[in-house]
Image (cartoon, rainbow, N blue to C red):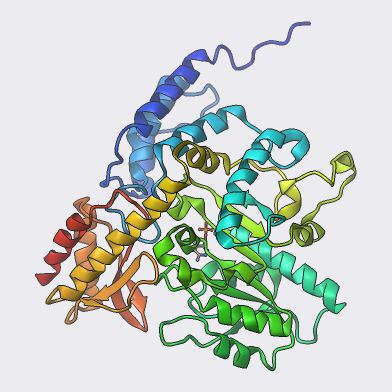
Length: 450
Ligand SMILES: *Cc1c(COP(=O)(O)O)cnc(C)c1O
């Protein structure tokens, strides 16, 4: 009996999708696109899930007219809020290609070629870290799951080495500047957090770490930030590595945002000590010009990750455990080969262009920082380690900051969202896009005189 084609002829939908993707990839994004209330979306989209289906044309028009415009342009050059994105056209276009192949990236057996390519891109990151060649890892969805997987490996390793759970439970150590995902991951793992007081730049120092962990036998890992999200601060990695070595602690470096700075010679010295870390993450979807969702998770000794993460089940018996199976290295099993758009763009453009793009972002940041320092009404609060600027406008209240930010956001001129720093409301700019024009940013900042 012949199988019926239950989906009918899908050629037309395929062609239409490719056309839409191609048009989108080649055009700039709309900075006025923004979130809308669910009631407005429901009213405009109508009922989309129906027994008979709404058909290709209607589904695409709902997407293009209602759904896409209600999402923020992450890659607009004047989106400088939170951590924006700046994927290359090569990475975006290739992401569409990757999707069309639907590769299973969990095991070598199913995804060998793609995993090989992902590992080529990871090897470049390993070389930037100054780690041995045996280091490696895999791509996961984001920094939150990358940090979790690294910390689970760290705890598994500590459990094996120490032969049991410490009295009072396991703990990690970090500063309050560590990303919120670290606290979330600690809750998932049911481990405590020793909050280490920050140094004068807001960084984790070796001395403070040594003091804070002296009477904490449960600490098994230290999370150092290589670029805090709020202020772009790099912790004192070399001193921290000393303490970790002295006390046999796992050193995890969270470089989700700032790890990309490793590629920039002008910032590289700030990372000294990172060559001694045990695990590291960086999100190429932040400052390495890749689309969502993409976090590179790396281990100095991947065998420790395998010991912690390998899943065993009878239907998985066939898996070759000697092969490079990303499944074995993080909290996941099935996975898309989300590192491929990053690999492709890196292969196409070359690492020199990545270095140049990182440097250009830093140059832009420094130009805007200089303009803030010279401005009569703005005050730079911290010399930038990387590409985040914190500054304030003396005399403004919280409401003034929000009103200024909201108005410019509505007009689609700039996305500059207030944050808090040492208990005060301040302004923050995060640069990850080499296309951002510093003159345009500086020009808009003059509107704070009002
Ligand atoms: C963004 C960020 C994270 C979380 O990454 P996601 O990809 O959003 O899960 C973790 N740590 C730092 C330092 C970050 O900047």
